[in-house]
Length: 310
Length: 252
Image 1 (cartoon, one colour):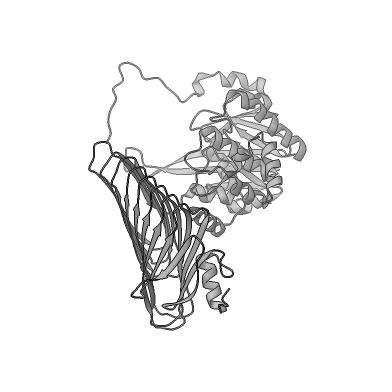
Image 2 (spheres, rainbow over the protein chains, first blue to last red):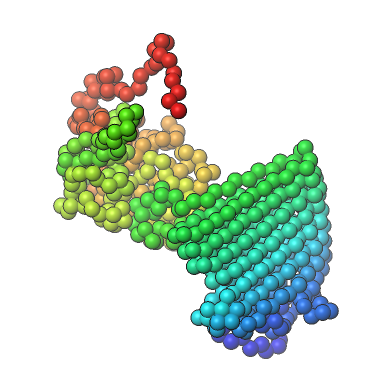
């Protein structure tokens, strides 16, 4: 195996976004400051750099089982805005976990940012779990921006579960998710975003249920602290006999601002669509209950938020 | 062990006139609860039972009066301070969370995370299914399930003073007697002063002292047989049937 130098900073960012202590098992591609830092392929997973060198193509062989691929990105170079176009080609009936994420360490006043444009072509009957975490830290005042885009195309009978998390420290995030579902496919998205200070986050989601028996469930959990602001938009468009649900909950604290707009479009008479949305402070009865078990007010608030974003 | 002195809780009452007036929900209660006794408080809807429990737990602030607990004046104590001093309250309408499980609540209550010991606790409260531990305490739980969880977290605290607010709501007939036995057992083993708010005869029969509250005042404290004339006295009941000649008005 190649010897890769991970410094303490890289390690802490990798731990935060990909839960990695060391180089992972299985296939991986680690990008640092706009360049490839380390890559490993496996018998069933191939990773290539695109012709233009602006991203990677990850190919997962049909029928691969219990495989995982880590593709974290770390940034610690002042003034850099790194844009990558990654494509994931998931073979029919494969079962794979993809762990992505970006960690920014900002040490100066210069801004740093990353935009990952991820396209998933999920083969017939394949099963994908995609975990993406975003995190920024560092003493610098430079603006930290993360603009992830995911485009997901689900073939017949495929199953995609996406966990999208923005843990903290990101000043500006513009998240876009577009998905198209073929017959009998299933998409589950859980998005968790916490903002504080003067941070802003926008999440735009468009899910198209294109064929019969496709199903989608989008869950969004937002915590908006300080003077931060979050906007959440989600549209499910039903073009066949299908099922779709959007559930978006926001907890606002301090002077946080939130706009939440779930929207449903039924273009077929057998479409079943629903949504539930709520914005509000932490419920008083939840706080009282935890305080009656011996927690202080602050401990109760933290415990409720931890559960809410779990 | 718990003494209520001249306890009042008032709310503003704006009624039909524009004048602000005050209404006493708890209207001058004086009572001393003895250590290790089982009290069942009953009374008509709206008589102040839950309000009184919330005053003792510190959820509602006292308008005037004093609460003495274990010889200390706790009137200005926060909910947390009262909980840490050994008072526990089992809510009538328990909170429903998002992302918090029964296991989480038990761990918060006891500081225990080890699965074996948590299972031991839930066994004691008659929950035999271990999968129950990882149930989310959310809106999907049935009324009976959430009340069992509420009871279990209260018992897990091993309080010196336990207040159960209508613990039998949503609980099936077959579980009520075991529930009474469980509270008695806790009292006998830990000398827990137990106050149950209930309309259920099983809890009235189990009590050392039956208490009837009406319009924010205790009108009876004694044994069950002595309370029976009051329990059958319809003049206490706040529910009235409408006469045929009554018109229904909309005040909007």
